[in-house]
Length: 363
Image (tube, rainbow, N blue to C red):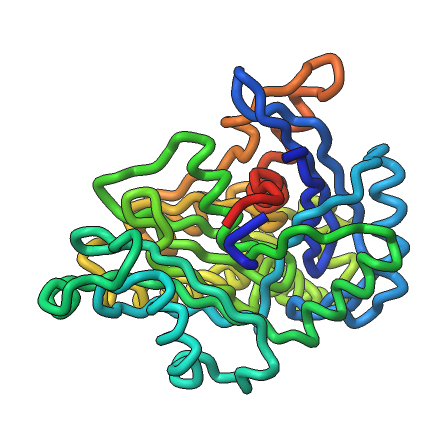
């Protein structure tokens, strides 16, 4: 369910600050952009990946689909937040049927929620010596060889709250995926996979940051951090005694009279430092059991729109950092899409475009 989505689906990415939609079509030239758009949400519509104001979300999504003239209501949607658990385990090589049975029987040791309250899925991400296609592996081989399996669980009530909104809008959800895995999809399309090292895809949203560490082009570690670029706005808000909306504008360079950029920079740096501490913790968790270290960070998300954030993260973490252009692997009609607009929106397009690569027949 979460690793899935043969007509193009409309991708819907719902964050704490905005809703984004995208559509891609596979052609002989590659993936062609059919549509991309976004709209902002009222404050506290979605908090920590959970719907708090379904009416506001319903209205925003309905208006966005209408504005983008999207008639296809078959959709792939992304889920993230504290309701999501991602766990990588190593088990003896076995058939997929045996693996499914083993995970069902032992799920409680991997998932901190009541098993009856979650939707769960798994994906084999790496096998030592290969995974047997039909029957179970021979006993001796199964003892010697291991495979890595990614287990995902999402609380049912969280998914239901989103499904209620989609039903109200008339959207037919064909695929539920994880936002953090969508990053891997679009990164692979951009053909930037470094097969000799580990790279981190860091998508900074308003209140949440999705991190996916890739080893040789495949997810090795994934985590959602309950923190985003709003920590920078909060620093500005506290120091200048302004409202949060005003702090957001100041963060993006719209300075009020009587304040200089030099005054704001230390506040921005304080927020970035706080965020980098959490990113570093994630890398430490990964590197505890990994053979590789993170050698490069690709930054995306709304937080990547902050001028110079790639340099600030690089200086804090001492790791090479680059802004990720989600449209770099996509072709588009320049008569329909302004290249300058797509270039400006490239950081925020990573997850919706990654979701849009899914099809209804994926597994």
